[in-house]
Length: 100
Image 1 (cartoon, one colour):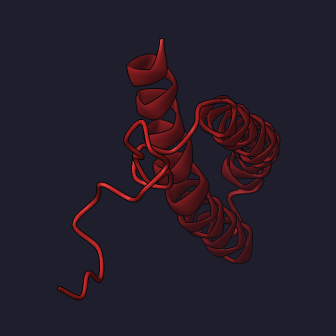
Image 2 (cartoon, helix red, strand yellow; image 1 turned 180 degrees about the horizontal axis):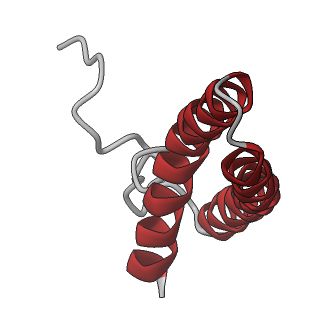
């Protein structure tokens, strides 16, 4: 399950970064077509830009939710290296600072 979430997060981050660029290109193309007199092409580009914008917003929300799930899932587990192991007498048996 964790691997699937990480793959989804990677796809989300890539789409969050690439969709605004695509949105800018499509809006620019629509403005170019409008200035050249192609009103039908400009309207099509504006509608495509609207769809891309909605997909981008959904992608941002999905990425944030996925990231939150991953963080909450990893905080439920105890980190491996945070506890010092002790022997039965209660003395530190780790390889920390020992003075002999």
